[in-house]
Amino acid sequence: QSIYGWRGADVSNILRFSHDHIIKLEQNYRSTPAILEAANSVIQKNENRHGKKLWSQEKQGDPVEVFHAPTDLEEAQAVISRIQYFQQEHNIRWNEIAILYRSNALSRQFEIALMQRKIPYEVFGGLEFSERSEIKDLLAYLRAIANPLDQEALLRIINVPRRGISDPFLDELTQQQRGEQISLWDILEQIKNSQRHFPNHPRGIQGIRNFVDLIHKAQHRFAQEGLGASLAWLLEEINYKKAIEEEVKSEKMREFKWENAQEYVNALTQFEEETPPEQATLQHFLSENALGQSRFAKSKEHKTDKIQLMTLHSAKGLEFPICFIVGLEDRILPHEKSMKETGIEEERRLFYVGITRARKKLILSMARSRMRMGKMEPTQPSRFLYELPKSQLKITHAKELPTDCNLTP
Image 1 (cartoon, helix red, strand yellow):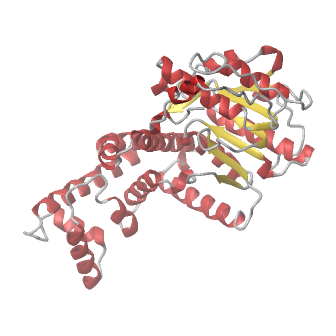
Image 2 (cartoon, one colour):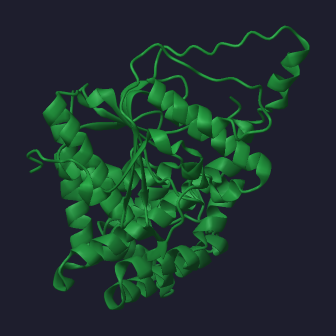
Image 3 (cartoon, rainbow, N blue to C red):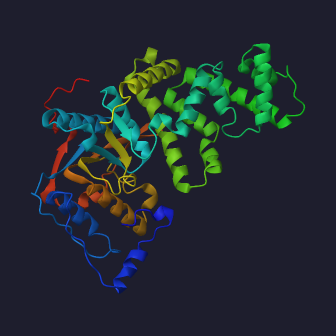
């Protein structure tokens, strides 16, 4: 299957094989007939392929479950509750379960739900949400805004995006700061107020003045307005999307990083909605975030039995007894940048790959509304859901899912 078109793969290379003798490998030794029927029904809609129908000698197996939840947050909570049901009622190990998604940005809600319930997980072939460089950038901005004396945070983002502050100039500043035993922020403010002069670094001086002004403006914003709205303003103010485009060559990676940045806006908005107004502050968000990450990191150290989270691209060649494919909505799967017919076929092949990762149980999920840049927007079910055979589907609402076991974290 050519699911790597973005890397230059071309399905026509496979189609040209028909000039030679074709041997169809149709017997499947992994999935149940119910899962294979779903896979066959989807992929047959692609025109650019050689006809092939997978079959298995396994027992028919359970129908494919499809459920919808009111929001992306409730979708994640329902998926994790379903996972706990399998683990507690059917003695399934964590590492026998995979959560698959089209875009890495979707992992955040599931990581949060897993951390809340102290369930070990691993982001296969990638970094956990909080470890991604763009999230570290934005977290450093939040830390610097909350406390400009946080030198580690300042040094990470003083040149993100580039402000013409060279490394030698920064070294000179930190040497002065250590020698005088004052904070780096004090030196930056003195430069801003023309109390320190560095005639050899005119561009860097202007960059520092702009940076100090930005931090002051951001402090006012975060104190007066919502956290999510303030971070959305900050991304616009520093033109972070353009900074990503200038630093990252791969269009796919640019898209990945910007989606993660947008998802971080959603994270702050969600925190506001779930927190009493008097506690919905930047300082409280940072302390809760640090404490939760620290506790969970210690709890999952040395554990090998972990739920696997991964993109559909990363799942190629793998298999799991139980697979969840989440976020089955138009604009996600198929991706909003793949809406042309050739792109739709590649997205459909990707969905097919996801379906055929499941050996015994396949659960598909979607949210009827999803947060984008801090605002809840209605969604449309993925067009691929309508291509599944109704005879092999079990469609439910998230609240109807069997979770009749102790789900207390």
